[in-house]
Image 1 (cartoon, one colour):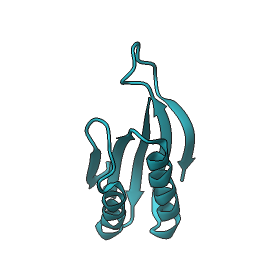
Image 2 (cartoon, helix red, strand yellow):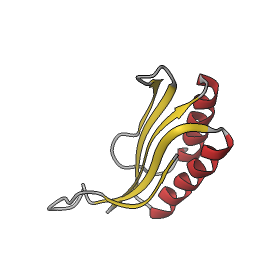
Image 3 (cartoon, helix red, strand yellow):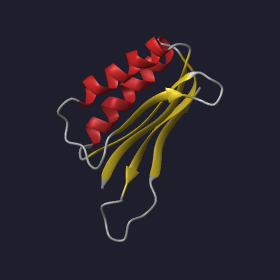
Image 4 (cartoon, one colour):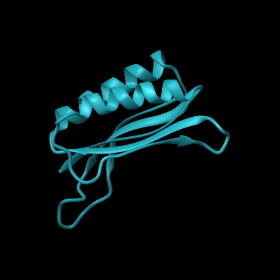
Length: 107
């Protein structure tokens, strides 16, 4: 079992997006992750700065910690629109099953 945090978020300015980007990278630090860490910054279809991320952890508490950080930052930065969720993932098991969303926040 792996533990994932997924997010798709929209911001007012690139600086606000980059603030969350830096906080996420600091939080991940040297934590043991599974697979490729995806943290993509860009511009969405309406021209707003955006961020998409997918981080899978070996340890559930690492997932919980990152989710709590993003949840806190959504209100403080603020995020204009988006979703962040945490999942139990069985991609590494045989047979693999779909992810199960444990908690999701939408704005």
